[in-house]
Length: 114
Image 1: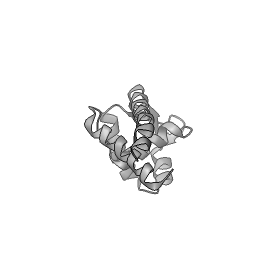
Image 2: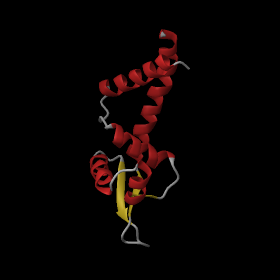
Image 3: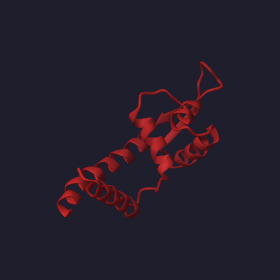
Image 4: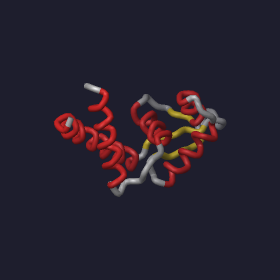
C-alpha cells in the first residue's frame, strides 16, 4: 500500500467519525481505548501511563472523559488498593466495532479512488 492510499483511508475514517453521531475522541483517548480493548487485561492507570509513556494524571483525565461516555469503567483493585483497574464496557466494545466497520468500508473505497 502506498503512503497516499494509507493516508486517504485514514482521512476517510476520520471524516466518517466527525460526521457520525458518535463522540469525538482525541488521538490519545483513542489510543488508550484501543490499548484497553486490544491488549490483554488487566489494565491499570499506572500500567497505561507506562505503556503510553505519559503521566498518570494524563491517563486519569482521558479515562474521566471516556468514563462519562461509558466507554470504560474503573474500580479499585481489591488485592492491591493502590491500583485502579480499568475495565472494558459494552458501550466501548460497540464504539470500537463501529470504528472497525468504518475502517473496513474505507479500504476498498479509498484504494479505488487513488
